[in-house]
Image (cartoon, rainbow, N blue to C red; front, top):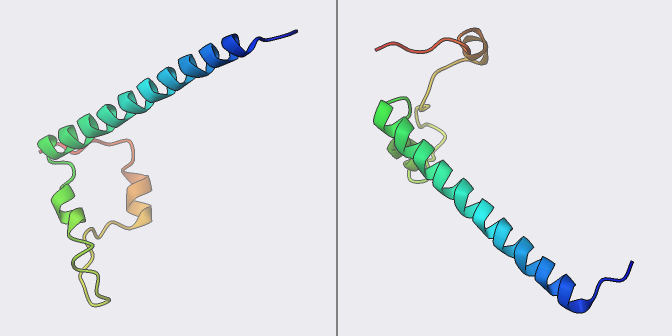
Length: 80
């Protein structure tokens, strides 16, 4: 099976376009997820952004959820 150089370049160009489109789709999906979770109030990403500024050993934890509580309540939704 012989693939010409032109065919190989065309396949490479299509692959690049598909990979770029996929990355753009994932980026916008992630931005939408961040916006929705911030809007619903399930996460406060401003609080997480301050970790870089306040990273002392004596700092208080952002969340006090133990791993056992997280597993126990995994399927439940929080009703406000």
